[in-house]
Length: 321
Image 1 (spheres, helix red, strand yellow):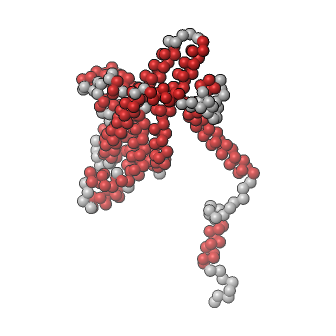
Image 2 (spheres, one colour):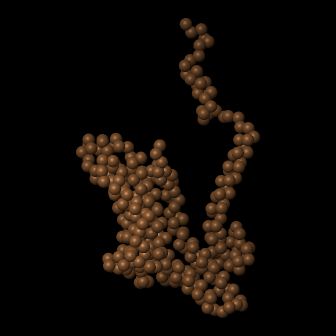
Image 3 (cartoon, helix red, strand yellow):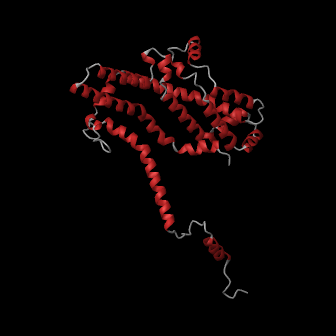
């Protein structure tokens, strides 16, 4: 018989939940050591962020500041003597637009080919029932440590007709073994095998399972390795330096390098001192900062949209829970 003193199960459960120390509604008392630890952690995080971001910010403000003020240390946090002379000189060269066009083509087509080759290969190497996978993975990994070298590669590309051919930026690097291993680990650890069993019951073969189930569930790793590939193509200047002689096929990095070297050569050839030499040096420095911004700005714009996939894509594929 209920005499009014018996507590309902709901009330008892609520009091038990409130007593649990990890309950999010419970505000634990914080002592002085907790506050000191939080302050030190936040101070360390802010310091690391400043150390990482300040060099980039300095390049930005230096590229639009008076180089005389930059050289004497007056420019530290905000631009001074605002000028865009460096960017004007960079963009006055018509080759830069050709370089931008070439680099965008090489980066986009190259990244598409990389994903088309890497993802199916990684999926095949992740299938336990495929017996030769360990041998083939060993052969892939072997190439990470041993390669033919520059001269054999040059002779090979010459025999294949890739010299002065835009395909040299795309075909030779069709797959990165490192990205292949990352994608393979992702498929092994993040795609449940039960999905394959269900797909077989529904009548899907391996190709249908890969295209209709695996790929839609792999957007994170696709974004991650796709950005890796894109950045690699965008920053590639060595290929154009060694295998390309035709100026119309040069990527942006090589065009910017030529502009920078040309202005440094002009600065060295104007004389050994005086006001003109100082002005030429300042112009060369401003062009240098402008070249850095022109080459990195597109990647800085793209990266924030894909950054959220990094932890989800790489860490899930790299760590077994």
